Image (spheres, rainbow, N blue to C red):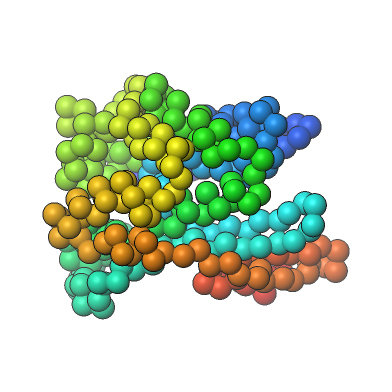
Length: 284
C-alpha cells in the first residue's frame, strides 16, 4: 500500500487469546488495552486505555479534543446503546466564516477553504466530545478507575516512545502546517526537519495534562483549568471557541439502528447523525 510516497506492506498474523484481543493503530496502544485485562478490567477499560494511549503515539488520528461515535453492548443485560460524541460548531460560528477555494488543484481537499482556515488553526476548532464520552464509558461500563486506565498513556507521554515510520511520514506530510505552531514543532520538527523513525518522542507537558484529567475528570476540560487555557489561547489568536461552548456540550444517547443479515445475524449500529450504520444495514 502507498500514500503520497509512503510504501509499506501489511502482514497479517493470527492472534489467539483467552479473554480478549485488542486491535488498534499502534502496538503500544494495544498493549495498554491488554494491560487492563491483566489488572482485572473489562473490555470497556481496555478500549478506553487504548484510546488514551493512542492520543500519545498516534496524535494525528486520536485526541482528547476529538469527536466520534460509540456503539456499546452490556454483556450482562444485552442492552445496546449508542453514544454520539461528535464535535459541534461553536456558538459564534457562522456560514460566512470561511471562503471556499474557487479553483482547485488536482488532489486538493474538496472541503478546503482559502488559507485552509477550516482545517488548520484557531478557526478550525470545534467543541470536542471524545473526553466526555471516554469518561462516561469508564464510569458506567468499566471496572477500573479513570486514573488506572489512563496510567499507560501518562507513562508513554512522560517517558517517551519510538517514532514509527508512519508517524514520521505523517509529520513530513503535514510539516508546513505543523511549523506554524512552535511548541508542536519543537517535538515533531526538531531543527526544522521531521523526526526520524526510531527517535524518541517525549511529551512531558501532555503527561501533566493527562494527570490533571486522571485526578479531576473531564470537568477540567469542559469547565475548568484546561478548558480555560485552551479558550484563552484561541481568543488571543482569533478563534471562536469559548468556555460557554465547552460547558454546554452534551453527549447524545441514541437507540441504535437494527437490522439482520441472512436471518442469522443481528446487526446494531450507530444511528444518525452517523450515516455508516444505516448504509451498511441497507446494503446487507
